[in-house]
Image (cartoon, helix red, strand yellow):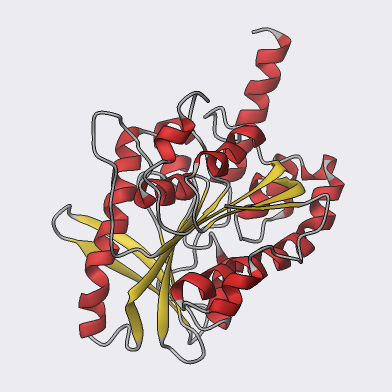
Length: 325
């Protein structure tokens, strides 16, 4: 193994270790608070359990936001964003994907959990949740939820899940997904896929409002070849109309995970060698929470003032970057 290959291998192993060693989700028997409940919903057609965390706003009514974790994640993923969105009045539902979650990565490794089969199950999990929401509402679980306004978001592998549900062309020989029950999309650390020549073709079917967030250090942590430039190519490939991108200087992949990391995970990610990333994270998180909430207000609540405030977002100052089209 030459020095360059060895260095890349060690970087990938550090990322996989970080993903797999994230704190496990809280026990389903011990919800964090009265407004946060962990449940298991069962898709009988697939004989598959889908753990969910319901994060309810102070007044449990309004639009719904779904969140999909990254490779090796769990229900703790997106906590920072979920708390901000719930405080703004949204019903937030975090989902956990068996086969590419924390237990799966710990048991079989990151590469074995990042497969076409796991990806297909993720898409099916989202569709199951969309089918299940009216059933849960009829049973009294989601009183006040506006199921005509649902947003989907996710980080890393969850961003890929979001892109797929938004209409990314995954296979030229198959039709793109069209899910009319989803109104708007946010992808944290998206990926344009391998190869740069057909990016626009892959994303040309994404017509709904779409917000991509990435950073100048948001590279490869799972062996899929992603680079900061590859992640920025997603926005460049999107067709015009209600599309947004936030690029944060010195932000790395886990800046966008939306969960609190242990000191050991920070070391595995190299944060001890990237002090600026750590120091900037509170400001980055506050800006992300502000702008993603504004995006949801614009496209799930149809607030015109929020739409105007995205054109541009004046809070984004150099060296960070804000793009719209």
